[in-house]
Image 1 (cartoon, rainbow, N blue to C red):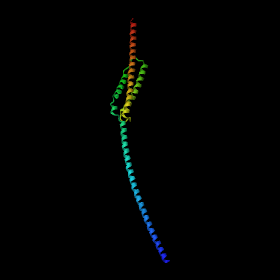
Image 2 (image 1 turned 120 degrees about the horizontal axis):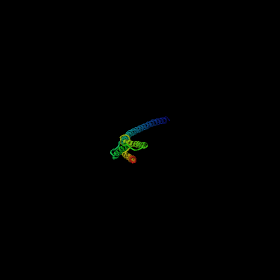
Image 3 (image 1 turned 30 degrees about the vertical axis):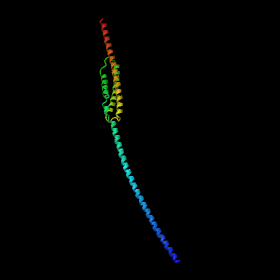
Length: 202
């Protein structure tokens, strides 16, 4: 009985120590696995951080390059090219403006005061419209005033050219008609004076 009790006690004690050491080993294995998992997570975290850092840096570089390209593009839009500045249409416009001014600078003798006033109104309105065209031309040729491509500038120049040509043709036709009327009036006055002189003589 005593022997059975001793053997049972020894067996129980042996089982407890073995079990305890087994659990300790399992706990150690678990901790080692946890450490390995943490190290793997830390490594992945560092890799992710590096990717993000370099990725953001790359994005910043791309954005800077894109911004510089856009800035260069918008700067080019502010600068008229040689095709615009050297266009013969520019000289045409300036020449027509001078001719229009000269057409009205000569006096129109033989007109009534109302007719003279009407000619003055036509002259004022026409020269004001010419000034609008010249201001638009100046903005078109000046750096930094407008943002448009050379193709757009050339289209605008074509329009100004056509508008000024219409004004020039109108001014020449109008002034020639007024001068013709003035000459006819003067001729009529001369004829009347001649007839009057003839009748007075007879």
